[in-house]
Image (cartoon, rainbow, N blue to C red):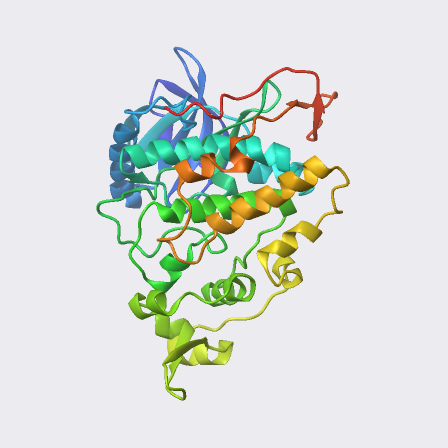
Length: 367
């Protein structure tokens, strides 16, 4: 990467690249007066997005970043007309961590620790009227997995919106995109609950629950596993007729899913069916059989409670989707993990095991 446009700012020394997105590049930097940080360099032709993101982080200042499990924003500055945002330096994303362990799934007790913290985050964002709108494994970061196993924070609020002024249908990554986004329904903080559910399913299986290459394929798989959206939902959806057709052949008008050929004819968008983990499931209840059946009755009960919560997080109707507060009161999310989660011995180990107490995040402390 060419960092020359950014090196004239005397307060930061660029150490290495951490990643590149559509609008910006992130680097590990050393603040010459103090600590190492992560700096997000916004592309010069996207400076408006950078200024908008700054306003979002100003709103986040109302929250305690450590108690609410969101990234700590330090400051912003401009270099050669590039907007730059400085944050605390964190560890691997959930996606990178999964990659390092060859996408080995997490256990339900480990997932609970992450879920509890992110439910705190969602409740906190709701309290200030903010919707993240881009939750995915890449934007959930392990703070420091060796020192604080499974302590996470939510990062990248570049797509965030105020819930009172939210009507953007170009949010979220395909595969983590809520059905109301695809179909063109009114949007609110329920989109974040959907993506959290999809992330937890990714942690449970080690694979994306929904197709990541096509909106049509994503909707097709949702209908396959969870059933078609109710008639009143489709009646209100701006883009319903791209994905569904209302049949007049019966006394009552009934929506049916379009074929891929019909979808292409209507939209002009080619789509293809790709194999994935979703081919194994007729319903979300089939997740129970993805792993060997738990022999311990307590673990079986825990897995069933996890799937029950997941189904409510992934409800096709956003008005019926479970809220963060309701989620935190469910059997699964309200349990304190009976053992502490720490990294197994070995400097480069990426596995997690249950051993003697070392750290447990204050996941149920609402800020």
